[in-house]
Each structure stands twice: as C-alpha cells, then as structure tokens.
Length: 304
Ligand code: BG6
Image 1 (cartoon, helix red, strand yellow):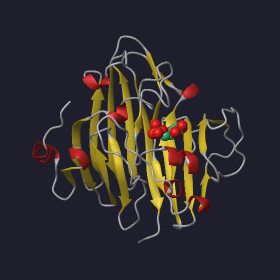
Image 2: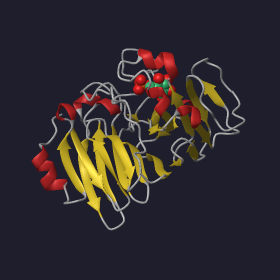
Image 3: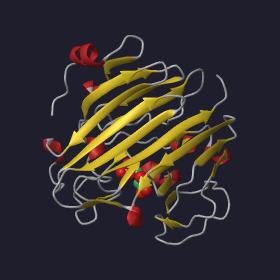
Image 4: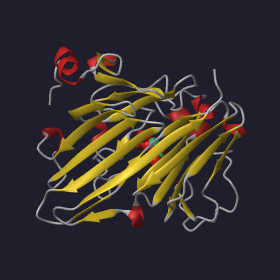
C-alpha cells in the first residue's frame, strides 16, 4: 500500500493548530496531534504512537535513539501494536515477532477535534496485501485520543465466517530517568510466567524493582499499574480496559547489547508495561463480534 501524499492528508484530515501531517524518517508519514492537555505523534506505519507529552511536562514514552524507521522493521519505542500473535509466531519461526500489524502501513480513517479531545483513527484489514498469511478476514481500528490523558484503543472485528483466536498488546515503552530508582506497583499478588527462565506461576509479592533482565507475563490481571520514578519525581499511570494480561519488559545489559536497534545503555532509561491479552488470555471472536483493548496513560509529572 502507498501512503497518500502529505498535502492530501493535511487537506482532508488536518486542522490548524490541532492535527498536522509531516514526513518522518524515510518519508514515513506522521500525524502530530495537539490537545489542550498535551501532544502526541502517531506514525501511519505500524499504527504506532511515537511520543506523548502532557502540556508543560517531560515526554512520557521512550524512543530508542537507535530505532529504525524502515518499512519491514519494527520501531523501537513508543507504542508498537502487537497483533495477531505475541512473541514468536506459534508454529512458523519465519513469521515476524509480535505479528504483522506493527510493520505494515495503516490507513487513515478519520480525525476529530473538539474542546475536549484531539483524535485520530487508523484502520487495517485483510484486504491489505501486506497482511497476507493470516487466514481470516478481520478489521482493526486504532483510536488514539488526547484528552486529559492519552487514550489508545485497539478494536478487532471478526469479519470472517469462522471464529478466530488472537493475541495482542499495546507494547508501551515508558521513559524513566534511571531504572534503579523505579518501582512498578499494581502487580502484587499476581502470578507471572518468567520468559527469561521459563518458570510459570512465579509469585509477585511486593512492588516490582528491576535489577536484571525482566520479561514477565502476568496473567489474569486487570489492575492499573503505576511506574514510580523517584529520579524524575513522577508517576506514570497505566490504566486499562479489555485486557487481562500485563507484560513487563526490560532487556538489561546483555540483551541490550545484542539488539541492533537499541543503545547499550538505554535499558537504564526505559521500562515496558504492556497492556495485553496473551497466552490463556488470548481472545476468541465469533463471526461479527468485536473486542477492544484500551490503555489510558497519564502522568503525575514534574513540570520542566
Ligand atoms: C516483549 C517480549 O514484549 O518484547 C520480549 O516479552 C521481547 O520477549 C520484547 O524481547 C521485544 O520484542 P521485539 O520483537 O520488539 O524485539
């Protein structure tokens, strides 16, 4: 699929001072949204939120300085959309990790602004040739809205004649000053599968601190998470709806060095808290049914 040219996007979907389109790296189109309470940027490539900044405060999302912005490669930071599988493909290791939605162009469906909201809706469906290989008809909508917080909603609709099952995640990367000064609250009492060791049913008894590679899938939790960043004196609050899994990820030292699109020291400045439905929490939709996965991200942030 080709992207519409920027002047067409600006004429049809732009709004002075609120919504503008520009070319990002390698010409990938980016929508810049401004609201009363903040701003954000969304890439049409991947349906990917690149940044979010509450008015007068520091940016909330992490973006790697080594990220690629190239067709066919995932963007390292912001909010990648993982769909319709999470992690490696269940049977075919040649398929892309975390599904195809994050590495294909999305269609711009609508923009809207009022005194309360500035928002954009992107769409992806099985008629797009880049989505070949998923054997079902589907339609996806991503709504990104700047309100008093950043709202991201991914709706999956089964337009097939057969039921299908999928996994999904809003793989959100959050920026922190120094990971050693960070505590993540909200997962106490929830068991997790440790994807580093392979151990299942591990207890999380206390708020989480990160002192090594962490790659954990917490199942059956609808809890809000709070990233307490003592270094920045701020809290990031990740609330969710339609999600029963939370994934926490930090690659730490060795894995960071192995990742070509991530700086060796950047693990100290990020943590992923992913709003998800994976494993036993995967979603099955009958024909005609739909499901919405939603994350609401806000920051009780120190002013600049
Ligand atoms: C996390 C997974 O969600 O994403 C990790 O739990 C994975 O296992 C990480 O390493 C990054 O994945 P990718 O495909 O973006 O490098």
